[in-house]
Length: 195
Image 1 (cartoon, rainbow, N blue to C red):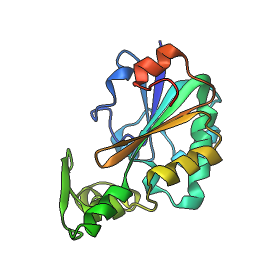
Image 2: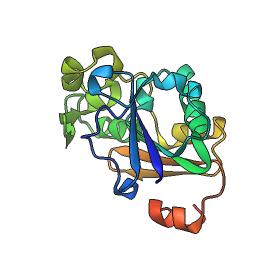
Image 3: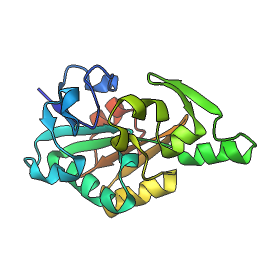
């Protein structure tokens, strides 16, 4: 059975992408109250067994670390994934939030509704204030922000080659590989050949 490491996922009740259906889902989180399989700070992924997981999934995690901490997190993800595996990352697209402000919207403008409630421009830039009030406070603050270009730079510095970044509504999806992915992997992840 293939295994995905969900880094900082908060709870196994929060859905992960359907392409992991049927996989063993291992949850890693710093908050032991969320009952993860592994209690660990994502900056310490290098402590885990090398090449243990077929994939690493991290949704809305990287923005919770300062820029100088990102290499440890990304290199840790690279450390735990198998050579033919990948890292799938989702982060808020602060470029889209800033564009909304450039068009005249203020910080309290609601961009979208998430399972935790409405998300404003301020929430996207600095973290969901509502969510931080009842869960982990300090851990929920955004300490970094990403645009397509800055996320690509972070992946390149961590030597994910090739990598793919997709701009989605309010977020960026990145896929980092240790080697050229197979046609089957590309199809499963919805990645076009040549991207």
